[in-house]
Image 1 (cartoon, chains in turn purple, green):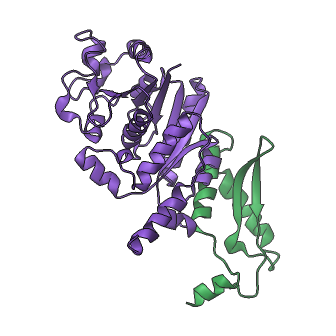
Image 2 (tube, helix red, strand yellow; image 1 turned 30 degrees about the vertical axis):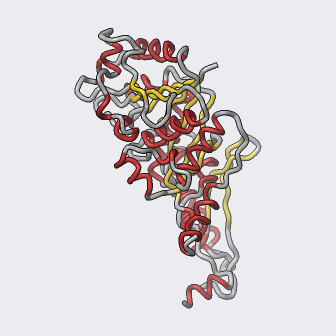
Length: 261
Length: 87
């Protein structure tokens, strides 16, 4: 049974696209067939994070308008053999994205893959509804900051009203030292406040910026704390019971760095 | 240094984490329509006024927070008692 997972947040800039790319890569590394869809029409970015920006010929609007088949518009990932990207359009307007047509397209992709991951646009308007409607599972990406958590709570409410029963929180950009000093919200606070279970705790990792710059997601790096955390998200989506040791490991790797490992 | 020593001896200040939790728990309840806006300030003021009559309480570290327990929403009020080292 294939699963459709939407990555959403309400607030922009919390790491939805990074999360979609890295969880997609992680699932593909586990041998799953994965299709990632950039639903952020007009602000295409998933292609950059995956390093596929030069390979795009067709985009989601071309498919929805029937100019090309859904299969032909997919771009094969260069890092893993079973990940495919459907890019957002950059110039064609988002008002062109029809909710029902998009849902039908996602259903078509269901038959081709084990996982269809959708990178949702920021905000809670039309684009949000389009991206969320076809999903079985929602991953709410949230930073441990009051503004992000408040917006995420709004999204959780909307997901409930849309009949989405399976939602998880992915707490991104957590600074382990600050959490232990009580200077910031802890992942368990976010879980308590949003009242949805955690699926991931991703430590802040300077390698993320470098990885995006190079188009090589951190999930491909063995020593990146964030990469490890994203691979754990994939394992949990697969139903595995994985302990939440991301922060203690991230701290350890800092010490390891200090002592030259 | 003095502050650090005070902290060690138990005169602990409310952490940023706790303040953030408290503020979020309230604002989320207002956003969800569970609590009417403005109620929190009134409640806080009333509780402070009442507790100010008892000097034993440390009102600078008063915590008022929404909690869910036994699938019911509850307001949890934590009133620390002053320790010797507290100002």
